Length: 403
Ligand SMILES: *Cc1c(COP(=O)(O)O)cnc(C)c1O
Image (cartoon, rainbow, N blue to C red):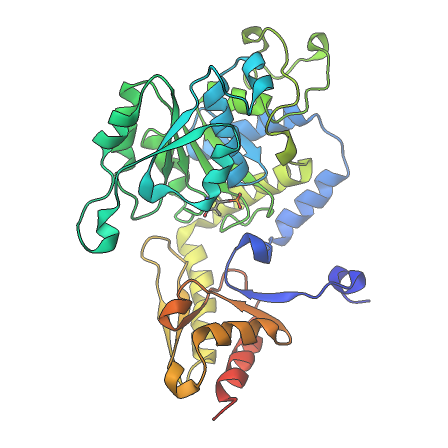
């Protein structure tokens, strides 16, 4: 019999990398899975579902409104579309053709990343400013808020801000200059949970919209995310995502969520329609969000740290390896295990170790983010209890191979 993957003939893996999308995201708690299964058995009106999700997300984030997306990247797409079109259905229908609209998004050059493709999908042009001179070691500065301010003009639809513990300039400084010019700030905080306080932080610092991934540490479905922020922008986002195959006369959305009186009619299916979410994802995300808040940082940190310590202990005393627990000072509970390989003594490098672990049986995917420094990382968050011994056995096999 086996599990569903066995029945379908699909090999599974051990995920010691973390909640990466390519490795299928978070492990879902039974309560989340059961809620999704339960939701799958009963029809709902998706607009009514999202209206209630909006209230729950608003409560959790301190924002005016919220929306469940198919991921943080989808949230960036919907948020950008909202900033470009406002509540004008004619503009919504024209996207990604943004001719005649404010269609530029200002971003600090150091904040550019592959996910901003979701922003560019809306037909906007990114205007990069500043120079991350600090990275070269030649200088100390990064983009400064005045440079963002200087780049804002009548064509600016939004400012994109990617939140990381080391992001510069600070969000409050960026908000101050954008607000003065009436331009919304969209914050990509996809992976900035935990701490749970970050659910409220970016909104409190003045973000007009913020996105979080549902499928990372939040523990929600892989294809889920949160968009939270200003009510008018959430309305514009919803209108470009929800299925609108209905006569305007029939359409009676909950007024606190979508104010029909502000619209001349319904837009066609919007630019966000390809990233639709099902009721299972919406419900799964909401239950995961409540669990995430209820567990709290301290208990979560204890749970994940215990697993990381068990893995560190299981990896002790291996040849050619120095194994340490590395705490994450910004994200409580996100401590990882670092294996520094003595590549010369081992006779192979960290990339080879990563590849051999992945090619083995079972396939073990470790953290590749520092492979260039001879480091293979192991994150506890997607490991099941039984995985720890398997990971340790596979690593030991590879390290003892030539000794
Ligand atoms: C993970 C991530 C995303 C994408 O999130 P999804 O929920 O997978 O769509 C976007 N931005 C950053 C910075 C991320 O880390």
